Length: 228
Length: 256
Image 1: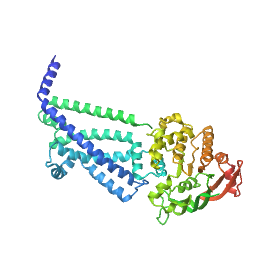
Image 2: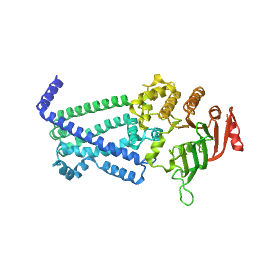
Image 3: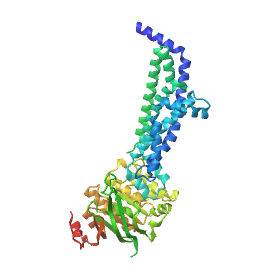
Image 4: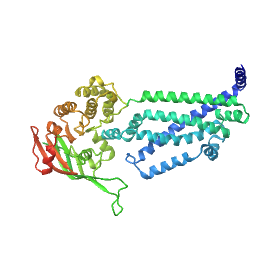
């Protein structure tokens, strides 16, 4: 009786915040959507070059690999919150503001790009070398070999996109701390600073459901694409 | 008879493990193929035979420049491959098919698409690709497997797809790198028949690397006997009998 009363009271409180929660959900989707898309494009290309410039690949170049790898390690070494602060002059120059979901998306995209680059490099490394050689022996140009590589690694790359988007979802909560908005921001402002535990619990459940859905969707797609 | 493949003093060495250095602090080099000259005739089936480490696979890979020789020339059908630009070499490779011990089929493409892929790379007219893929599948007797993925095939079937893929653009030369080493004896026999048919019907010059003497006996017209990167001799084969003159060569052909 007491439990159900407490529950209905919590639900009533949450309902009064419907607008804020929906806005936060939208902000999170914006951050996740922009940053994941950009990270896949930039990080994907970066990862391909990381792989191709590495030892025994057809663009093998020690200096290039060291520089690309160095940049990747450098950016990945930043704690996300510090990267956000460090990048604020840059985000201001591009989006006109250092705060808000769009500005946060930019920082998330950069952090995500270098993370994804390493994942893609690893995915490409799992393609048997013989397949690249067979393609070379046919007289395929470099761009065609890259297409073959990506197609052979596609299942792993989809898994990497899954990992990337879940990581960015989690990073986006941290982005909220410095004005990024989104669910993480709401959880901290209401759930922590204002002692509204039910807000925090609800948001954690919401985030968990999102993670479960992304992971399940990613697994299903990766499995469908894998013909090995 | 006209020479299809001429190797003039080709050689290849590799840097062994970077951590291994000699007393002077220089990395250690390992000679895989000592300067070797060889002439392979148009339309013949030529074997490269030796113990592991003899350099036979490296020698084969020098023919299509998958390994670029440190010195010497590789001439195929009167064209010096070693002097070609990267893009001309790609065109020249359309005339040199290759099959591998581990098949190296693209696992995320169907049998049909694996073969069609090579035709596209070779610049085959797109309207003719379908007919050509089906014709090649017919040659290797796998018409009913066109829409299967490689993972759904047996080893022998995979190798036959490899052959169909390699011969699809009508190459003049087919390089075979230990094509039967991953297969059981019965499958090996049917595969050798398949290779012989292709040689006889299409006139493709075949160079085959193997360590199995039985493969050489059944298939080849001539065989180069290799030992530790050195070409010992080229022996003729008639009715399955091989005439070797060097002591190590005689030892090699006594195997199995």
